[in-house]
Image (cartoon, rainbow, N blue to C red; front, side, top):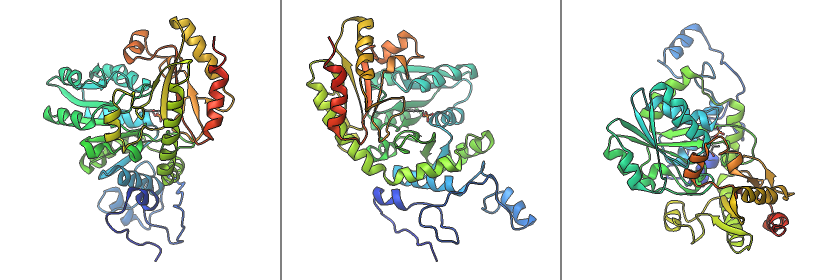
Length: 404
Ligand SMILES: *Cc1c(COP(=O)(O)O)cnc(C)c1O
């Protein structure tokens, strides 16, 4: 027999390598990639039972695929939730949450400094379906509380945020949501389960842009929602199977392999980010550094408590300058002078990336929304990878040291 039942109580690092669906009859060591749209049925009577959900069996990859199931089971084990459901992208995971927890007339409260597309989706597109959205200051629990109405069904937070690394206290928000009969969803893309498991602090739904840290090598788009069987498996699963927001088996397989090295990568990238943030803080051409691992971060204590003592792999900094135009020119100069770092929107990659949020990820927001989110023209975001740190420092010096 090729399958052994895993014992109880294994550590997350072990689960990240071992949880998967059963091996096939061939006993493959690395999980198989089931690249097939449908599954052959042994006979018509079995097919009828499977389609009627009277017996489990794979039928069609929009409803279920073993490679996708392996990714879902492994991620759920790492997040400490009953189950997970995989989606085609991070945004389709957020769409799935919105379309299954909200209906016309409902209200959602979210942080005003969330991922740009999330703000557009929840605050813009959803309005056409009669869903109301309030945006609040991420760090202020009183603001979240004040925004709650009788029809509030969902609180949506992202911690730490992109690009300013603001945190929110997940346990406090969960308590607040539950006191008002609402659910708390947390986008955990920036931290990953290695740094924080939001469900342990009371979050009902944990959302992932698996495109980012979970893949970790910038290869595929993927997303997931983790939570209870009742909500994720039943309600979201039913919607996903009809709505077709599925993750493709190939992409699931890539991310499944990514999970195997997640812990090593996140810890190494987080340690490098702390060193880089500390170094940037003392650079004369840097006005301010945003990184939860620094004691200068206003929520440093919360970060250490909530994020397993680590700051994460993403940091941001403001270059020196006067006025929007000069700040933008300075930021562009620093990013354009790099020869190792990639100017690209992905993050959580093992290759270090640098972006100018005000003109890219947050470029579609109005100036007002951008100001509310605190994203200035002099801001640069770095997602620290695994290159030798001296090479990254030298790369940034090319631009920083030649600023006027
Ligand atoms: C990238 C990202 C998303 C969206 O994920 P996609 O896979 O690009 O759709 C959502 N939330 C956060 C925090 C992200 O960084």
